[in-house]
Length: 128
Image (cartoon, rainbow, N blue to C red):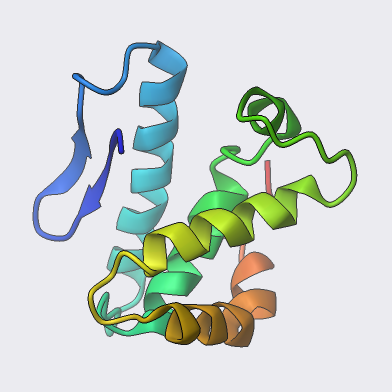
């Protein structure tokens, strides 16, 4: 893990894990989306699997982290549908690491909020 958003502390970048500027940029962009969500939603509760999943869906979709070139470099060579598969994979990885969310709870939460959160592009007009 190269870093991320930590409530109350901001964005943490682990320079001992990130050697390329582009990777640092991705951690910061992803963290900024989480920070935006925290500021925008007065009742955001990171222990709530649906809240956590929604922020992860937005961060994965809006940060560009699931761009097909990044996916190819990670060894995922699907041409169609790669972006949503990537977002789902990364949401599950993050939400299942939440001690309040079992794998089943994480998957159910992700599916329950997917359409609303995936299509929520604020503060952008559209997904990059």
